[in-house]
Length: 158
Image (cartoon, rainbow, N blue to C red):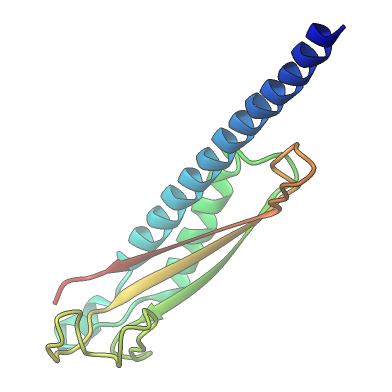
């Protein structure tokens, strides 16, 4: 009887490990998917800029077209999404250009100061924050993940 109890305990522990591994693999796939979608949204939205203002020496994004592009990418990504059905992806976009202005969102110092401490004008950029609300991704009762967040920033060179 002792052998049966020990075997059964080891079986339950191993099944829990396998369940955790499977759920963690799905969580990692969801993170990688949201990262790729956020990068695609930021890079694509940065391509929509005002050519006329650029010829005058200013750089400004066409925000409406950028937002339409982001919404299109999010609609298309719903078809391939590894998240459970019924999950929703919300987005937040921050455009930084000569018209909107620049602010430092990295927490490394004031705008215009690079990582090496040299002062210079900041680069135009598009930051996309995605937040996926979903059902619990883990089946084990002591782990709960119902929200995944990813952020991507596309910065244009000077």
